[in-house]
Length: 304
Image 1 (cartoon, rainbow, N blue to C red):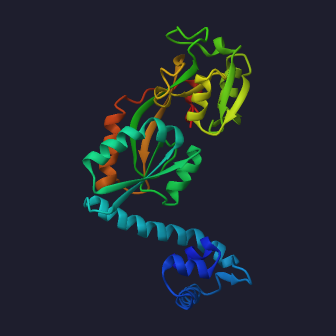
Image 2: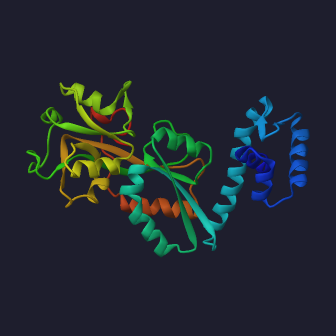
Image 3: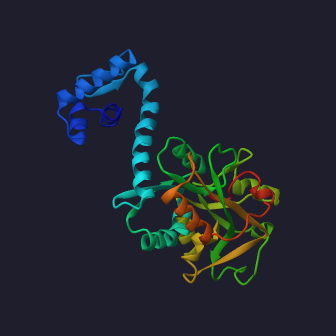
């Protein structure tokens, strides 16, 4: 299966044999043996490269998951024993990778030097959950999933704030209501989730009686925060992401009523060994209890 997946990924027997450190005849022999066991051709040999057959397309996702699971099993066993060379693969969304994980990773390095961490970042919560379903990582750190079938460890709530330049007329306030921002220009992030068929900010602002005027659209939340600090406009973002920019010509204004999202660690299998230890570090880093959500949060996270 590993040979088959590698040939598909490289679209070449020659490149696959180099990566796998086997001769090309040996690789071809193994693929033929796999096809005999399956009962039909999985790959169509082309003059330049290869192409999946109908059977190959059906077989590929299961083979990918099996290969990842085998590698994950080996990693987990070594990581659980604290063995040198053990790896723990963590999947998350960009805002949490920037705002929450750096301090946790630093502490992990001090306390578990034999187990390396590999970070996988995703643009949306949907992509994150899909990646964990495929077995890409050992565990995920993200917004609390709605209908997850595996283990879920709640981490508490994350506050969402408005980021504005320090000279904004509202900068001295202790909090702000969304309707008070109707005359502001917004920076929007491509990771903004959809609520009831609309981008979250459009939906929330419509409930407050106005439509947000957008000046800039960015790919990542951290970029949007820096844009706000430079005076381009305002943006809603997780407080942990904003903290790195505070003191750099921007302020964080809590919303009234508050916007929060629940965070969690989740996985396909029970968390043991290194995975369980990492989840515990996260729990200690996110001590706040999960609180009831207001209307803006009822349909999943405010900012991904």
